[in-house]
Length: 142
Image (cartoon, rainbow, N blue to C red; front, side, top):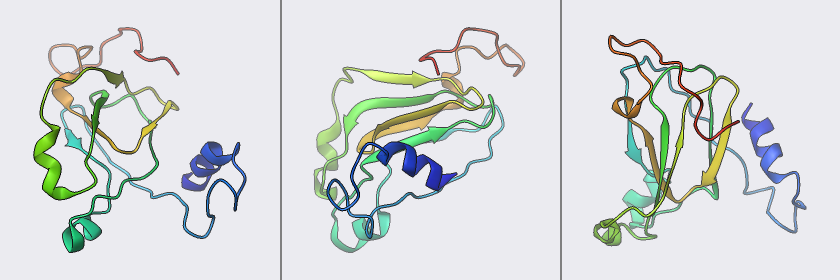
């Protein structure tokens, strides 16, 4: 699946010209959630490099592929991470825009890999009291 996602997002590019195939690829993460689990706000980045040098390196693109309709919506905030850890204090301030994507099986979203994102369970405005899934319309489409 990771290779398929990579190929989908590079199919319009020329290997060797638009990107270096030797240093490009996809990282695979899986999460198994129930309806009350949180994925806290975070940036995808190379945490080992950050620890060694204080430099924050992010993927060019970040993606989420939903396999189920369980869990809170993915929220992507218009808040770019700085390139150096010493500048993290500069991220505070108003959020001017955001994307909210409700989990729908088979749905795939892509966004700038430098953006702050997460999936807080308490942001699921469609959940019914008692933990059931609401029947509200999907937000953001497929």
